[in-house]
Length: 289
Image (cartoon, rainbow, N blue to C red; front, side, top):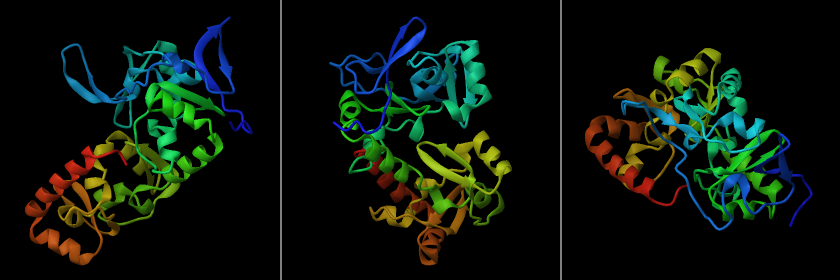
């Protein structure tokens, strides 16, 4: 087992007010039994006491600030809820909520909560992590989809993190600003200094104002089919479109591989989108990618 780098694994055990941490994989990380290979849906619709649905509930309702402050996965309380970038976060107390509200990005899981091993492995899969299975390294926490993924990560932690980061840091729309596309109908390259992660994907923006617009209503600016060309999808192929060839259709950004593909879509948007919707649904039901 490679131990050239100290990867802190937090078990959520508190002794005399401080967490017990180890530099090697433990049997029961974050309160999950080693006999379990559990998977948790980390996002669901938040509901109030009347059953009204709201923004997506992040981290399965676990408190984001507790990972770094308490070194534990602690269930949050709906009384201490915060909304950030289209998601609802539950904190365990008023103090933890204040910490999160003061600097949300600091307390978000790395890779938007995706399984670090899956993202950094040979396939590069986008598989949601389980909020109860995590490790902390240099003040950041990383989730895993299962105990098996958690253990396998320690075979080569440096390599998995390096590959995961390189894959995750590839921005959507080739780095062009989605707010400019939708609001200004212009393809303008974004700036890495103004970036945001949403639904496991990285976006760049022209400036802080456009980033704030995205943070307030991210779903509005996400390109249709995650930026894949609908014409290709209608033929059961996944090909990324170009931000230079786009149109706004029913309030959504739609990108194409070239002008011919755009003209074909404009000639029959309902027919092509129907086939693309069916293909996209089928692709989504396949193994996460």
